[in-house]
Length: 145
Image 1 (cartoon, rainbow, N blue to C red):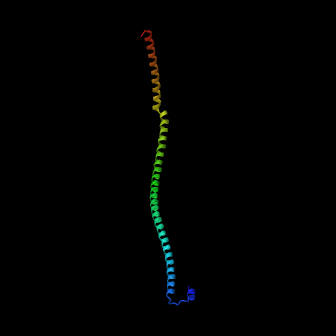
Image 2: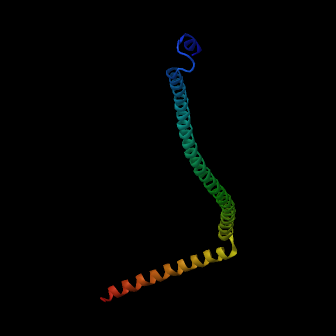
Image 3: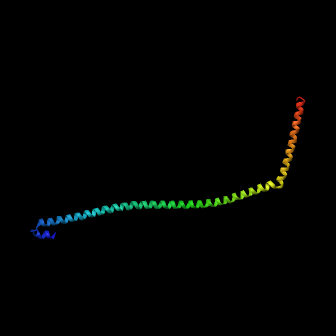
């Protein structure tokens, strides 16, 4: 710039020279202002993005907290179910053992032996009665009734 001023034959107080200098200064300020506006627009855009991402992060944090609590509840329920399942398994084994004992003892117990004898006696009596009924039927059919 000074090179132009040195070559310019107008004097320092020449109005056209001062106007040209002011125009160049105004142009330089406008360029700086343009850069500032561009930077401000970028800053505003970045702020907007940061605000949106912050809102998303807060939402995700809440979702993580909710899911974490739900996961803890599920673990508690699972632990409880495992305990109950263990107790039920023990009760089932005890019941199966008792049933096996009852079957084993029941078949060989004195009461069962007595019942088997009584059953045989009843079967014999039933057979005897059946034979008597057949005899009576034959006698009645011979008699014509």
